[in-house]
Image (cartoon, rainbow over the protein chains, first blue to last red):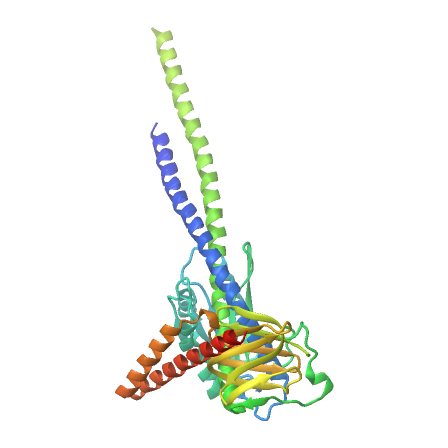
Length: 296
Length: 141
């Protein structure tokens, strides 16, 4: 019965693994709910500031902020938002693939890329793959705070200001629903003047009726736009981080659910093998006894 | 009276959304009253009260710690850093914060401390101002 014992211990170890994965699944499920709430709560601000900035981009301001001017692209920057921990299925890998593909498209036009990694997975990925990292931030935890991101965002904005970056993208996973997350690459800077997502709703754009209009600015256009646009970028990155956090938990929950199910299947299979082996051993013993008795 | 769409959000959540007749806020260059048809305007906000007068004549009073105000012909957006309903403010706490800020202002330490203290003072004063407005409204109604 040596084989039987081995199988028995294998079943035991798979059962232990199953306990862990099912515990992780439950933890992820409860964290996901909270992460989702956070994501929904910060959405109105991100949406509204996008609307405002969309208006600003359509306006005809006396002062053109650097962030509004489309320039020749010599180098692009990516803010890559990943999770801090693994065991979340293909979540991070799919996103890295999207970044690499996007960067390669630029590369073919002779445009290099710099990266800012948010989350330790992205940091590790670019260190291994050899991307040029300008900033890395990890350990944001389950409840990311906007001020934790200010540093990394500032590095990228400074690079943009200096002209060493001509375009800035944010890459993160979009929360479609619990079952599916989609990696997206979104352009942050320069602002896209004609945004499909800026309107969609009510207001008839003033640009239609009169060609050039502008805001009244208080205190003045420069100060105001400086603050507003920095705030805009920060809020979009923050929204990306919060959304990615919800994706992470959802992806982990699904991954762990699959792992638990697979462990169950494995145990069933092994149990069958074990029972067969046991039955075979018993049968053999009986036939040996019967054989022995007949010989006597 | 003509109304316009008004959205007030803070970084954490949506605070108010609806049709209003008038919106009164504290801009960096002074208090502003916005009615329908106001010229497009962008301004930063100081810590202070934001008052909206709704279609029904009802008033809502909020306290914001700063942010931006955007006016479009028929939609007004308030992007507050943080916003609270004025009735949720605690007067005793605000007064205490003001005293504390005043004290640290008088100690005159480094420039950074000074800047922080004066920001705190401005915030506490603005909270008290909001509360005063709230009380006046309560007295009138």
